[in-house]
Image 1 (cartoon, rainbow, N blue to C red):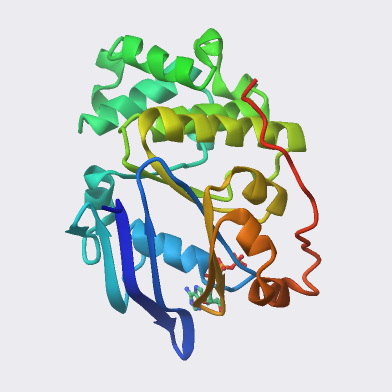
Image 2: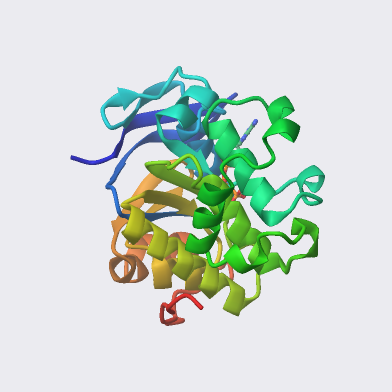
Amino acid sequence: MSLLTVNGLGKSFGGVKAVDGINFNLHAGELLALIGPNGAGKSTTFNMVNGQLHADRGSIKLDGHELIGKPPREIWRLGVGRTFQIAETFSSFTVVENVQMALLSADNRLLSTWRRAAGHKRTEALELLDQVGMAAQADRACSELAYGDVKRVELAVAIANSPKLLLMDEPTAGMAPKERNDLMALTKRLVVERGMAVLFTEHSMDVVFAYADRMIVLARGRLIAEGKPLEIRNHPKVQEVYFGTGKTFEKEVQAQEPA
Ligand SMILES: Nc1ncnc2c1ncn2[C@@H]1O[C@H](COP(=O)(O)OP(=O)(O)OP(=O)(O)O)[C@@H](O)[C@H]1O
């Protein structure tokens, strides 16, 4: 049975059908890329899955639970996590403190208890940091870290609640090619080791073709293709919608092992 099942999902803004009756599913342990040209409906789809936007029609089921109509916090509790950029205010906290806060939040403890709970779940937080290769930098302030390392901490924060499904909106934006590969290789490892599913949007075709297990392609709100990277690369409809956008499907990039 699939973990996430989306059926007939639709959302309009005024006269614009941002998402026009799409169907797809996602299995545990799978990395699914959602791609499409600008304005295709990727963000709208994402935001309906995490509950930030209310769908006009259709259904989004996680493990058989209907998500439509539920507030974002409840959707998160049911097991849909997402990566957030570590906000300015948290960058003065150390690496491990950021993960401890995420663990506190997963336990439904208030942030005001933080000062009293500075030692809370440090061991669990260090274990999570170990999984993303950041345990050695646990006591450094996030503000001192290289960009690629901040992204690793953000990933540790996102998995603190043990999500069944992790949503990643352009995870590698602004990163150099080496950092991109490291982050996606790490994501792939977490997917395999934790049996977690990932749905991600991405503009870098190199990243998508190297790391996605499967892809879905949107254009003007419609799902125009679905399949494995190689099938998508050769799909005439996909080539047609991308023609002239400057994005090509020619580059072959090999997935790397995480550093
Ligand atoms: N809040 C909104 N109000 C009005 N129109 C919107 C709103 N959000 C999205 N749209 C429209 O819906 C369509 C799909 O937008 P969406 O942001 O989902 O596309 P996208 O694939 O994420 O694009 P991009 O790659 O440029 O981020 C576009 O035509 C957009 O202008």
